[in-house]
Length: 389
Image (cartoon, rainbow, N blue to C red; front, side):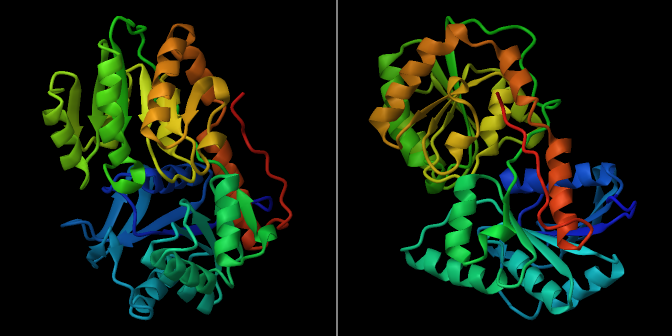
């Protein structure tokens, strides 16, 4: 409820939602759950996933419309511009929506819903979760679409200061309409192992989509060199994608079957059990607006080694993360530094520090910004952002 005691009805729209796994999907789900607990009505609109079509209810009474359209590329629906209008209009009217909240710049369903909602006079909010370039053909096309759909929105939210700067430059939207709200994790779900792991064998965990953007090719070069330099190091790799074949080939080429365990796709409910089996979390992304996986690993007490890209340096303080340039040599040096730091790392202390960055408080900030879009609060809302000390 807002300051006047009114309940609001919020429609979340994105091509990316469960049962697909990823940072955007988790963000929408947990934000929706927190808003429901605050007494507001939240509805999610996404496309069908396999046989999952129609209206479904998930935890907490969250209503999800799985619109019967199939994705055609990278979980995105085919851009139709106007063919989505009837279903968007039906949901907006049926659910008596007061504000539409779109997520992710390369979600075609999000862009079309934003355009149709503004056409009908609804208030709209957009959250950007990724970074884009300016020079290649794909980025130029995407930035033109962004300029068109964000021209008339009420406000935008970005997950890091780097992401905010990137979105403002790409879309041409006024910086005064763009706010930074960092991601958060449910620290009750990501707790460290009750017993501290022995350092006789160092386990490095990688959980990521195995695609080019997530630095899978970098892993192919880093893992053999780390295994050569540190005989007591073992890797656990969770995730799936087109680059998994390269990692399997690397494991065969260097005879690392006993030191590199490939888990395949890991359901979100099992991520903690994988994380707490390791000492170090390795993130090799080539571009990242925030990287919520780093927060999940830190909440489980793991020391993080990551590439210094995008908004990653904003996620954790320097004593909880070792940053490196996205090159094999620098990544190997960062892993060596992290191994040397391990004796001084207390997983329980790391978990407590991450716990300061709570989902309910950040959801309240999201809500305050959303309500400012519909006039319940001033747009010059004062937001208190939670930082990890």
